[in-house]
Image 1 (cartoon, each protein chain N blue to C red):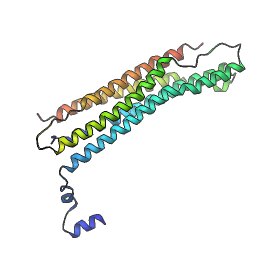
Image 2 (cartoon, rainbow over the protein chains, first blue to last red):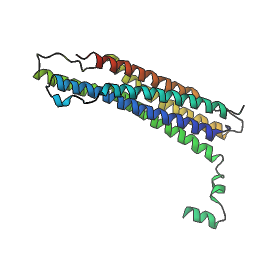
Image 3 (tube, each protein chain N blue to C red):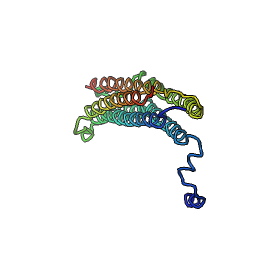
Image 4 (cartoon, rainbow over the protein chains, first blue to last red):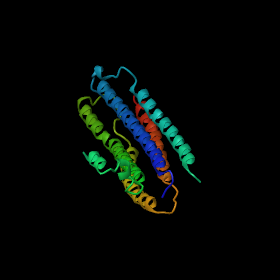
Amino acid sequence: MIPNFVAQAANERTLLSWVRTALTLFSFAFILGKLELSFLHLAVQGGLVIALPPVSLRWLSFTLLGSGVALLGVAVWRFWQRQQALQTD
Amino acid sequence: MFTANLWRTGLKPLQYLSMINRYTDHSANERTYLAWIRTAIAVMAFGFLIEKFDLFLAYLSQVMHLQAQKQAHVHLHSSRLAEWVGLGLIAAGVVMLIAATRHFYQYRRMIEAESVYRYGATGSSLLLSALLIMVALFLLLYLGHTLFSQR
């Protein structure tokens, strides 16, 4: 048997949920960054002025990436803390 | 209907569940395994996105160049490095699936055993988090480089 298994496993699943959330943020940020590139391309070389993004997508993209990293850092720290607390010996 | 039948036999649902030894532990183990599978799929999808999203941009780049050959060149294509990172993430997803399956069976045996074991799969979760943080930092540099080298 493993003492506190249910709580330990729940703790691990919580970290995994945070990991998936961060992954979603990263994907979104990546798409935004790449879309800005194609928008610029359409605007500059295609002459399609309307394609110019009204807000800076690149900063939005960087912010999303950065917050994903921060989120993961906090999630790992909390996971570690709880894991130590649940360890019976 | 299931519960009603249990009540008729005078057996409460909780008692029924306790007939399977350490049932809550086993189901927690299974839920954790499924969570790992979902995460591995997400990692592989992310890798695929990084690796293949540039196909669309490369196509766009080609079409646009035909129409505006004289204009300044805008780099849309990715570096080889990004493709390798994407491939690496897909490989990491496969490794995660294998490791999670191994852990699942290991835990099942430990739960069933009478001797006391210590919970200890923290290595793989911490490794995964560290890997993703590194990938995110890479994307930050990579997107920053491609975006700020424009014009």
